[in-house]
Amino acid sequence: MDIVYLNDLRIDTIIGIYDWERRIKQTVCLDLEMATNVAKAAASDNIEDALDYKAIAKRLINFVSNSEFLLVETLAEQAAQIILTEFGVSWLRLKVDKQGAIRGAQGVGIIIERRQPEPEMTSHP
Image 1: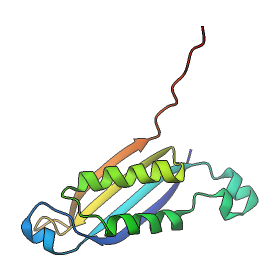
Image 2 (image 1 turned 60 degrees about the vertical axis):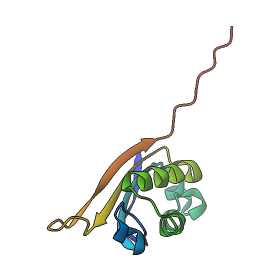
Image 3 (image 1 turned 120 degrees about the vertical axis):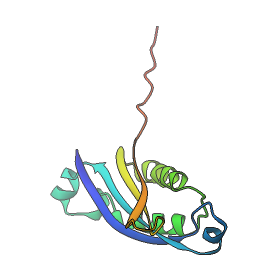
């Protein structure tokens, strides 16, 4: 398993449970690690054979910047599902950091890991 990563993707969005948070945009920082096999892309040197991290970044920027979630947990789960379903990633680790949310802390957030569900085996009599 090879890992393609994207670190410190900063996106402004409405996020939070407090009234003041619903009125302003805050910056969230995303770090992603995504499982892929880079052998075909390395052999062909063609973007068509690679996991296109620019396309993933653009999709996440569009999704997150237009969202208005209360919880970082919801944002993380829905972003993870987009990557798994739209980009064919089999496994990912996603960190969502809500910087400045706690006085005295650089950031606070969540790290989740998700994988594609295993295909169901059908038995034939």
